[in-house]
Image (cartoon, rainbow, N blue to C red; front, side, top):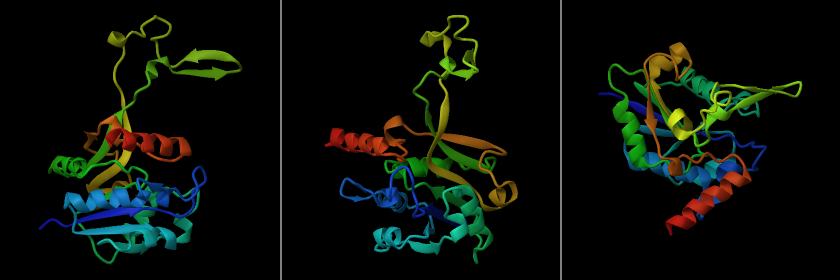
Length: 225
C-alpha cells in the first residue's frame, strides 16, 4: 500500500503582508483554505501543518491535521519552504512513499487540482509541480545596464510581438509540489528528473504575498457570489 504525506509549511513571520497565513479571506484564515482542499481531495494518509506560530496552529487545530514544530532556523525570513520540508523529512520518524507540500498562500487550489496532480505521478514520473500561464508576454522582456536597453529575446528587434509570433510560457503556481519521498531526499529538488506540470487555471493560481494580492483574491470571491 502506497503511503502519502501532505505538509503545509506556514511560518509565522511575514514581511510584505503581516500575518498573511492567517489573514482573513472570505471569513476564514488564509491557511484554512489550503488545508480544506487537501482534506477534501482525500489523497493523503496524513496532513501536517509545519509552523512556529501558535496563532497559525490555533487557526487549523480543529481540523484533522497534526502539527510539526518548525525549527527556529527554518522559520526566518531567509528560510525556504523546500529546505524546511527536507529538514522535516530527514527528522521524520516515519517514511512515506509520496511526499507533497502545499503553500498556504494559494487559497484557491481545488481538490480536483490536487487529485489531478496525484494521478499524474505515475511510475515513470519523479515529481509533479502545479503550474499556470504567465499572462505577460515575456518576449518583451528587457534588461538595462548603464542605461542601455537590452532585449532578452529577439522579438523586439525583429518586430515579432504579435500573438502569432510568441509562445505561451508557464510558471510554478505555488499550489503544490508532489514527489516520491526518496527522490526528494536524494535530489533535494522537485525539478530534477522526470517532472510533469499540472496546469491550473489562472483564477485558481493566486499566490498571496502582498495586500494587492489579497485584494485580487477578494475580488475573485466577490465575482463568484
